Length: 409
Image 1: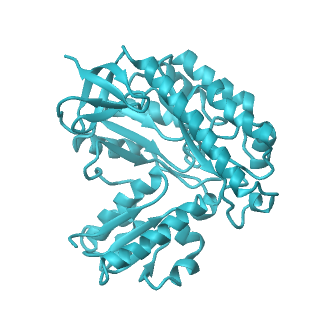
Image 2: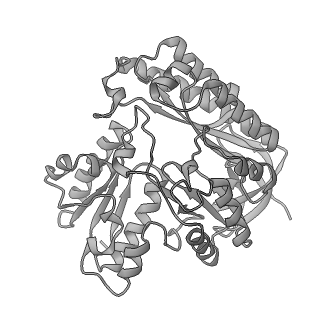
């Protein structure tokens, strides 16, 4: 096996950190290892990680297997007991070159700034830039704050410098990511908001063509970010909201900070400011105590908010969280509700894509013949095109899951 094999589970932040891991391991001189970057957001994610570890050992009987990430942080004993695992690293150690062998001359920079200073993703059209880490909130279903620690923000100057490096490396689109992105800046001098940071970033890096945001908490979108959503064409018209549920009692039991009415108001405000915006959301099916009526309010939220990109999570109890002690919904009911939510999401996506047919957009080419529109819809087109380039296209059809585009001059 040439180099190291990195197996990643979970969120975009984990995908970002896997690239830091790749660079750190290479800088340390490690080769021929399998590094599994785990996720703890659901029991299914952990099951898949353990399965991948066993599969990796069968494929590479002699390779060292290193396990890290949130699942390994929260339950190291579980992974240490696996005979396939040679070494465990916590979430801080996984970003440091010294964790993978003898530090080299390149290691000091990695050690100091591994959380955000990398200069691209291998074989990808867009780059992810971590600007925030950790979370200060304690949603009753979520174990991630225990794995990631308190909220920490990257200074604006460092973010701008990294964005310049991405642009210089040929990236047209940068995605800002974090565990709790809208909490950005509360720990920095002057307490800059996410919107203030985005405004300063776009001003400091005028050559950055497209900026996209990852998941946003609807309770924390600041006034400056709203202004940019309405006025800044380089900020992509695509917002992904951390909604989780559409029933006020369930939201309260989740310890979320928004109501159903607030979620709908955020969606309407986004469309009033930017009519071409597309909205996505995370929704949990089968949260403890959820009745059929409560679930239906979440189901109805897909239409009421106009959610085109729905990420559905069947509720999975996380030991140590308050929700794990609440009366559960039967597993079969959880699965059935998740399926209904996914069906609603698929229908909403199909309707959204049909509504875009006949319009023009700029498509970021992810691979020959395929890319993403500014509003994040997947687009197929004839011909090749340079990966990473942005091509203007007319949208001429849809199969309900992807659009068909024709390049235009």
